Length: 426
Image (cartoon, rainbow, N blue to C red):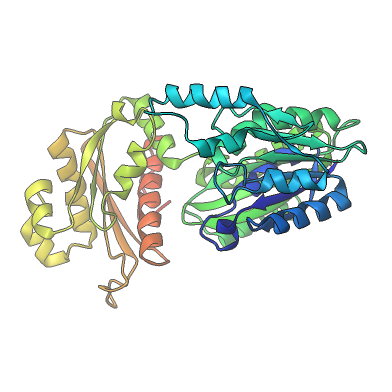
């Protein structure tokens, strides 16, 4: 089956909103053997919507749209597509009743706004796709020739929920024969550059176990995405398993998870398993490391707290950093990073503490300590270590890279306790 995707909204064209819906749709549909032949974005005007959908229908006969199903005047999707099929709009009282019930369940005062009644207008003969995640119902509209358009809301949370609940089962039922799927597996690495990984993999990088390999570098590290095409689901899964195993044999130490795994969650799990409590001390990252850790549900059972010690005086008073150490070495130094980590452990009675102090820029660097210089201190049950690195990027990226590197230093210390070489960030 070939399908086209049309995402609708002026905010997408103007760049104020990033289109994540099309990417999610493409991944989910490929996994059931549906090929996305084209993706396009159009504005909110009725003529633009009608033109984009009509052309897509002429090419493939199957279109999925997102956006334009809300209650406001710029939501023109339903009417525009209904006109292509020659259908009138009809009001569904059951939808209004459901909207009123949901409005009351939210504890809203007063009556349902009149603008929401627009969401009960549905093209004649259309199939309503239930929205258990918001107020705008989805729509499946099909003609006598079997051409169809599925309309989903543009809010990503609602779109993803409705895709899984309503649309994927409908589309899957129309895929004939054994589908040839496109499936991916992503290994997440950090602490090793893209070119270094490619060198390590050597010839294996060209076609590991007959699947394609893509390198996706970013501030978190390098994701290695393996993709199988032209196989049935079982064969694709087996091919990805073989390819993943081959890669892990080479880059395993740098790999911290798969898919959307967050390194902070990996660290917290290791602390939990070993019965250790954690504290953090941050300077240049300004709480970013603590935010990463506390964003993970359940972090409170191992995360004690932290100190944002931006000023030297705070380093001295709250983290017990010696003033003479600061004077001799400067705030951005391994000596200070070690004292910050030890001070955080002392202040909180933590078993493990990690510290970050650096120069995030854009100013403040020198020949000896250029912008991007970051020092880390690590306290693990009385043992103190430190290391230094130079991060690349702008201020935001340097801070994010520093927090990720600190988490990776923790991961290696917890999962590889025999590791003694901390002269570099693993």
